[in-house]
Length: 159
Image (cartoon, rainbow, N blue to C red; front, side, top):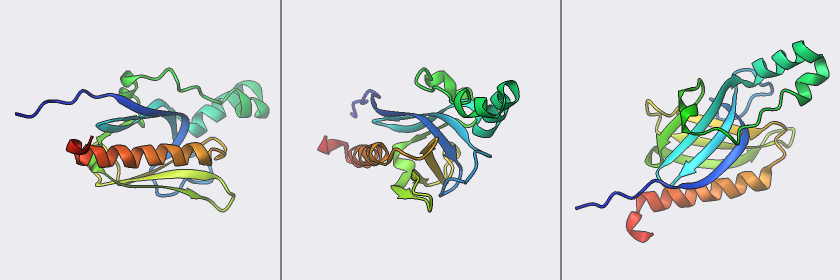
């Protein structure tokens, strides 16, 4: 008989923008801002439900062009599993994540690419980046944790 392992949070990463592409775009068009939550069983993106460009335009319209740069920043550290109902959220089992890597764009911004088997709950690929891409060390640490947890979830007897 198999004992069910309780799901526990392993790592979180706040304030990320997500593109449904292998590389982030040069604009916030088509992005969602949110929090990545990694558990011992799942990879989740908890979206605020707001696209990156829409939020910036809203604040720019309300307070001028500079307001979009400062007020448009979204805090995501209060998002919980109820955010899975928001547009742009993702939740998939770790066994469906097939690869992850941290790379740099031509402008030296760092981003994380996560590839999956393309299930109904996960796109085939997504890329994640902080607002200005200046988080390489944190992205590398998160990616190492993701790969470690993926390995453990594939071989639970090694834990």
